[in-house]
Structure formats: C-alpha cells, structure tokens
Image (cartoon, rainbow, N blue to C red; front, side):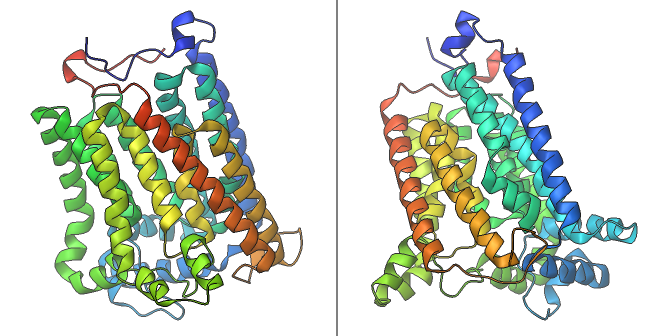
Length: 415
C-alpha cells in the first residue's frame, strides 16, 4: 500500500490526545502572543525600517504600486516585490484613518505568525503525532524571535514564511495543488527569498501526477501574472535591479560564513561569496531541496524547511529579521534543537534591541549593527542552526518516506 503522508501519528491512533484539543491550545497560545505583539506595535515606534515603510507608502500614494519603482527615496530604494505595492495601498488608506504605517506592517506580520503556528501544528501532527505537534505549534506561537521581529521590528519576513509553509501543507498533506500554487505565488509577491522553495514544490506537484502539476502551476502562474505582470511589463529594469538582484542593505554582514571571513581578515572569497556567489547559494538551497523531494516526495515539507534554513545558514547578507526564515520550519526538522535555536536567537535579539533603544523601555531603535559580544552570540546561534540542519538532513534521509498525496483520496478531514 502506498503511504500518503496523511496517516495518523502514533498518538492519534491511540486516541491519547485529541487533535482538536491540541489545536485549540496552539491557537490560544498564538492568540495570546498576537495580543502581546499588537500591544507592542501600538505602543512603540519600531526600528529604522519603519522610516522606510513610511517613505514607501508615501511613494505608492504618489505614483501607484508600480510607479513607485521609478522613485528615488532619501535613504533607500523600493526593493519589495510588486504585491507589496498593493498592500501598501491598503496601508495608505488605513493611515488616512489614523492607523500608523508601523502598526499596519507589524500587525500583518503578527497575524502571519498565527498562521505559521497552526500550519506547523498540522504538518507535525501528521508526521509525529499530537504531542509533538502541540509542542511545535506552541513553540512557533511563543517564539521570542517572532515576538521581536513581528511585534517590533516591522518587516515582512514572517508573512512570506507563513505563505511558503501554507503552500507546503496544501500540496503535501491536503491535496489542494491549485491553492498551494497560489499561496507560493503570494509568498514570492512578498519576498523573493521564497524562490528557494519553488523547485521543491514544483517537483512534488510533478510527482503527484499530471493533474496536480497542472493545477499547481496554474495557481502559481495566475498569481504571478496578476502581482508581477504589470510591474515587469512597465518597469522591468527597476524590478530586476532593485528586487531580483537585491544583495542586502548591510555591506559587512555579521553572520555565519561572512563573519568567519571577517575574522580571517576578509580574504578574496568573501567578496566573491557576497557578489555573484549569492546566486550559487540560492541554486544550492533550491536545487538540494528539489533533489530531496524527487527521491523522497513524502518529505516535501521537510525539504522546504531545509531550503529556508539552509539559505539562512549560508546567507551572504544578514539582517536580524532574516532569523525568521528558520524559526517555524525548524520544528519540522528537529523540535528540540529548533527550540534551542529559537530561544538563543531570541535572547540575542532581546539584548541587541535593548541596546539599540538605549534602555529596557523600547520605543525607537535608532542604532544598527552588532557589538563584539552580540557577534559572538550570533555565531553560536549560527552553529546551533547548523545542528538543526544536520539533524534535519539525517532524519529526512533516514526515516521511512511517505509517498505523495494521491488526489483520488480527496481532502483529509481534520479531527
């Protein structure tokens, strides 16, 4: 009998812990965290990124969601995918009604964390049982990294991560390829980092059969056409340079491979790695995940998590918000070490943002960069992430593989 990836976990089969109760517990934790994040967003200004968002909203109001690519801004250029232009139109309307730009961006990220927590719960439940899923879902919901980035920092990394994980759930476990393709298209419309997950999910759709592949690609292409089409047709050069070739805003990243290079007095490979080498990193992460899905299609969700986490691990650029890329997906790879990574990275962020604010009373973080102690702590987080990846590769490669979802079975019923 071909396994579908939807079989009940060991505790589901024993009936020891009803999935509905655990799901409600995850939702309760996520709702409590959401309230705390929204309070933080409503009572603080945030980081310098809020200034950029305010400029971008003003630009969209002046030139529209496509014309904004042609504008020059005081401290940056508009480097977000086209879907965000339409989101900023909504943010502009809310601003006219008294809702600050910073609050709107952080509220969107905070709501996305609720989605991520529930999606991770469902993905882990069908693979490891209810108790493991509850741990994973609550771990995502209460993550200190997500609390800092979503509730305070003001960026869209939590949003694209939620869409990527949702796409993996819909395609791998729910037999809904059209909706999965649309979710992945929305993720790419928020941040192009989502591209590392595209090949893996495309391969899974192909392995599921022609019907699944057609529906998945149709949903994906439809969303891309609507969100990217007008900008690509009207301002391809700006989109290519500012969005697709964006190399990060930090010219001396204090993270991972790049930080090791700095400690070695910046040998020649550092410049190459941060230059065209970044495209090789993308291909490595995306291609590796796709190859894993080809040989073990039942591990597609784990492959997507590996793609995101590996891209963070090898990233030649860095911003504190990048830590979000691995937080939720890591629970599909190793729950214990995912928790260790989240707590360690959260502790670093809490200390760093307190220094940037000048006190424990957070409002406006008008500083940037990490001091020596924080760099060392980030390096420890990087090593912990390496352990998560090793554990994930080992478990994904050695555990029995579940086959792709056959659509003839229909949609599974939530218990």
